[in-house]
Image (cartoon, rainbow, N blue to C red):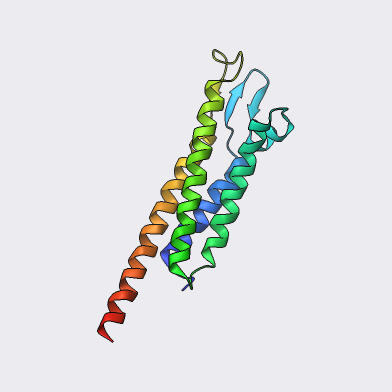
Length: 143
């Protein structure tokens, strides 16, 4: 059952959360582009949490692919990944609004929207998982 459409959605969500943080910047400031992994070098523990949440979301999304034998657990883990990405989005918005002294010189990058894309992909995967579960239940009723 690994060849299902939810596998593609989960793999894309994993790539978006884990791979795209190397490509797209979170914001631009006078010192240059700020990527998610650059935040490990900052002194704030709150800023160090952002790349950890990106990578955690990517790892859990990838592991969820291999839970195809237990669709209910796969669905629940998908919801947990959605919550992680929503928390990450809120954290990114909070950090971008409270950066000291950068209100006039910083621009938000496309990396700020990666959690939204990951949530969308996980929602589509959960929809496909639910559809599969309903199909199995309807077949079991006929037996």
